[in-house]
Picture 1 (cartoon, rainbow, N blue to C red):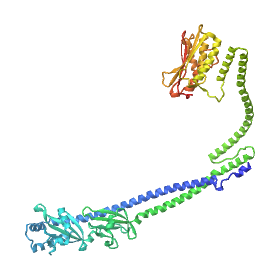
Picture 2 (picture 1 turned 90 degrees about the vertical axis):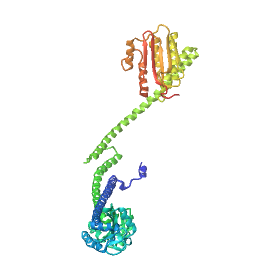
Picture 3 (picture 1 turned 135 degrees about the vertical axis):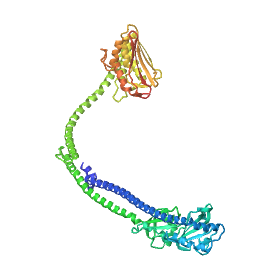
Picture 4 (picture 1 turned 180 degrees about the vertical axis):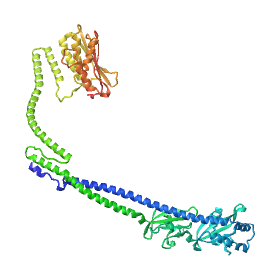
Length: 593
């Protein structure tokens, strides 16, 4: 025993319950805090970033609205100029082939000056005829020499709408816009062209953004040329094509990362691009990360202290109980007088004390049972000898009668021996037999009864093709015995007993019938028999109870519940007409041999 205990590998010191509880709680807390911190961080980060993007989008919409207001102002002004009565009259005369005199062209100077005074940022207003000749200012520059023909075609397609050309290639400080003048008195046909020159500073709308944050704005015309920006370096150094083609929200300019938001102007076809530093968006996230880490560290520290205290409170009484259990190995089991403030530990100690009491009691009971078991085994060995002695004695009778020539009595002894062998089975023998085995037992019984009743008894047995179906032992023989006892013996003339095995009207069932031609039963006796079969008082003073009631109950025990049906005996009898007892069983129940 000591050698075996020495060979067992003891667990390491740190595998104590206290350390396991402490480590488990700590890992669980770190896992929970980690998951909660990560989820909080990412949810709050997404919320902060979404709010920042909303702020950027709102700023972009405000700036775009400001740009639309400036454009609407120019559109209104050029509409007023194009529909001015004097301008309409000059262009109508040109369409009619009348050349405008120099004095009429000079008269446009005060008119255009008055219009220019309404809007700051307009450098000049230029008026051209249908054949691209300039009427104002007073020089002979052609419209086709100022802008490309594609813009003139665009103005014609616009039918009086203002077309924004963008940066003047010949003067980068100027922005151009062109409108076709429609003649009101000539079915809105083309009368010429009005072009407006604007200073690029007119489109400086960076007052809509927060420059303290480091936000930037860029206005790009339809030719992908910068119109206005608040970048500290020249706008021409920007890769406008890359900025316009950027599909994501993040972009790097120089060494700084920005969130890019684009807004397209429907009136001009230009693009307004906003740049917000990534640091502005992530500043709140950094503060959030610091707060999450600090709260997580504090939570882990507090849980560390709580886990240590809790594990100590749980394990200290357990160690005392272990000490008491170890002491039980060296002598009689003793109770452990310990009290703990923890209900579970108290219950464990009480269970241990009860176990000690029960084990001491069991030790005493087991000792007494050992003696009783020895005596029982001796009686069991003796009981095994009794059937063997009985069969040997009957065999001795048989050979003695055979030697004396008493063949009839010898056959009677053999029949009795076979009956006893069939009835007295060992505990390990199967209680299910075939119909053939059961009928052979019935036939041996009838042969014995034939010796007693002589010619008063005749019988017939018909099992057909169902001899190999299994049934419980001793189901048919008690019914045959009942038929002889209550039928044939009470019959004055010759009695007959028949046993028939045939298919039942129910599919998958067999019907076994035992019938006699005895005196039968009246209705009162039959009713009493049915009550006895259902647990009522016995109607006969003969027998020991192993009869029709026993068979009925055994059928219920063996077969009830099979396919949801009830089983039992069916008894049919009338006074003077004999009695028929039958039962039905599944043809495949218990298997076949």
